[in-house]
Image 1 (cartoon, one colour):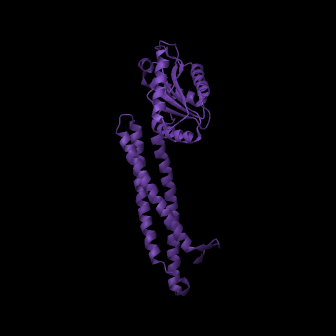
Image 2: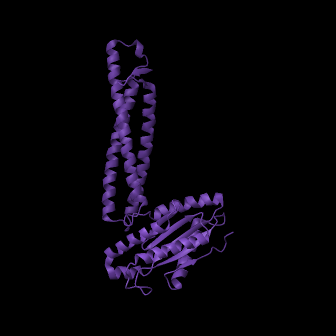
Image 3: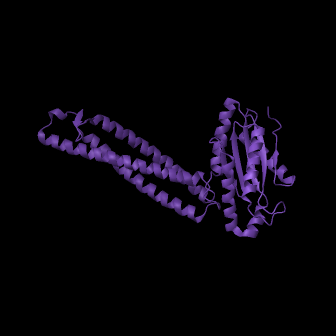
Length: 304
């Protein structure tokens, strides 16, 4: 059934109802996903790795979400109630009934607009939550959770395509001594600078850099052979050297240095992503054993 709109466009009321119901379903699904995300974050916040600021931000966002979801529930109830009241035989209604109909229609349209605005608010809140979950708040680069998800996804893609996949795991040399000498505030500044160095060295949009944990960083290089991975590692070394970050407590150089483990594979059914991580960790150990401030290219023995 068609009704007139102030803009002189014809509006199909049944179509509006259909769209509102679809929007209601989407909002409810989004709300369920957001609730699951909040629970996951709160579980993560129980660990010692989250700062007081992160806890405060999460609690504020969670409160906003709960308020928004309550409003969505009220709107959903209103839409259901108004839908049941709508009469299918508009042409046969009396003038008074038609006036009531138009008032109901106006209310319904306002509810639809309000639900659309709430949906956008929920999407924005979801982005904020995702930032808390997937981004390291100190360095503002992806964190270990994001790294794990991306490695699994890229692994499956390159398994199908049978392309090279390289992984770099990097460690700041003698970072504990750096913290002891320059303090934790100085250590935080150092980590931010190193994160920027990784951004400069791994420039492709497909490359994934992440803070792996503590003073360790990781770089996923899709469709990159061993030679290409070693080139990226040398770029990282060069950028760090150009930064010339003082580290007088280091026994390697008077400035900051990195050790890097490199592994390259073509994913196959005989291995899993964890095998790649363990091999890169072992390569990092070899780089440290050989004097640090260097890269070491490792191998996975059962690679095809």
